[in-house]
Image 1 (cartoon, rainbow, N blue to C red):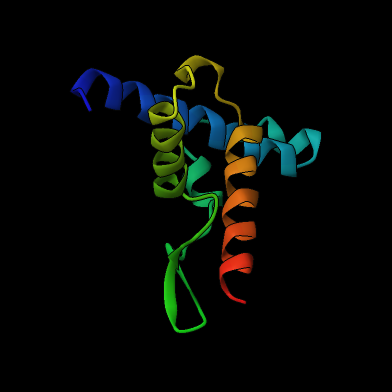
Image 2: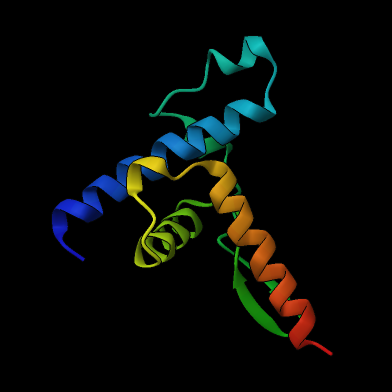
Length: 102
């Protein structure tokens, strides 16, 4: 991908994760969340171990960036991507893993 597109993706990751963190907090706490400090509220572990395999942890910057890139490759416009789209990708991934485990 182009450097310009990657910078736009990074900015989108920041805005989506700030939106997600704010959705979990009360109104008073939402006002304290900014682009500078939201990373302290994200999960610390970047990977999780499940069934002997390491998986990328959900709702981390890397996870969001990776899923946004997948959506762009499928033809979704970057400006139209929401946190709901990322959650849809998460649900789709979980369903595929459950089907493949049988």
